[in-house]
Image (cartoon, rainbow, N blue to C red; front, side, top):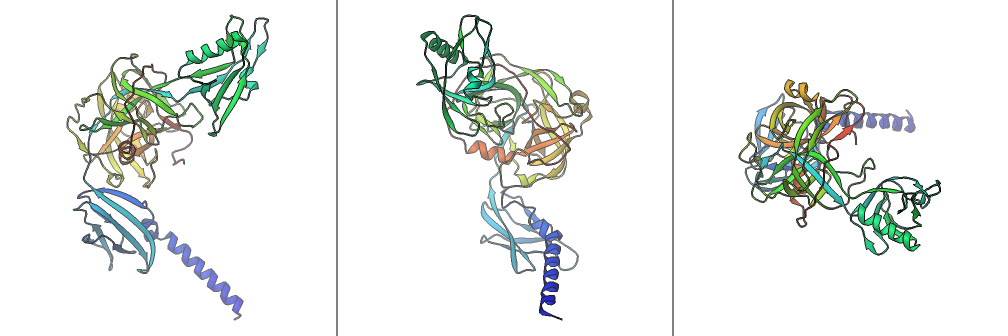
Length: 451
């Protein structure tokens, strides 16, 4: 046998071995954990496979044998009776480190569950261009100053000349004043790619007598969503479970100020296959303000409540569950689909996607409660942020509906929402507004995880 043939055979053997190892249950089990995990004190970290050899780094931590498995394997659990940091290492064949999971054991955080329907109002840092339009002149011509200058929907107007603009009315006044003076308008714009450019436009006299540049802008974004939970001690709350974007651009709202108000659900457009439904909610401008919005992050909005909110289902705080607390199986969701009454419905957790990153899609769920299905057809827009409770822990919130199967959708982990909220900094702000939409991320296509 030649040396070349031996190398070929050896290469094939090693390749087959690598494939076999990577497809083995032990290997896939080790990589099913994120690189970092948070556990609450007293919650065991269970290792449900005995193939990889496991070591624990923290002095005093111990692996306790729970149940014997077939052969020499055992089902093991890391004792988490004390707070602190630890790590678990999985080793292939007992020799080769293949995965290390860092564990943080913390005291349980107590929160009051939400489920309240809320009006959400955000004012962006500038004016968002929502569209371009022609200016009809006094002689019947159609002129496009903004389009000709290279402005696009989704761009954000930062300033006009040396003046910051905060409202549509201010912008219209500055443009009209420049036109009457015969001056060009100098606009500082943030493009959708993040670059900042300066554009110069000549206002055109509209047939109604005023001067315009052919821009449609908005100074605030409003909609209806659901409060997820709040900290009774600090008033810190979180809601929605996903970031608010500028229209269809997937660009996060560059928030300047905002608030949440009490909303009343006046009706529901049920979901159907291919057509996501919607909660119809209303709130009164400037009335029933219940909190400020201080940040708009990947896993929702958060801020400070102006006072405690009642929840008859959970009048006292319950522990916040880390993502490792969530399991496949039955759970319950709190949401409002009529008036201001919070109701409790059954759901089923179908799949879980553990991760170290804060993402708005951490698990897949299905609505199973026939009462909710009859009234809404499944998940509808406006339910985003509805808290999910399992085994007495608040573990997550609804964030997405699958448009082709509205009984199913995605949720985010409450741990991620809390991580965003408790790292928040900023000052309290207040603003007025009105409802325009209901919040929920809509996923087209079949029921699968979409990055």
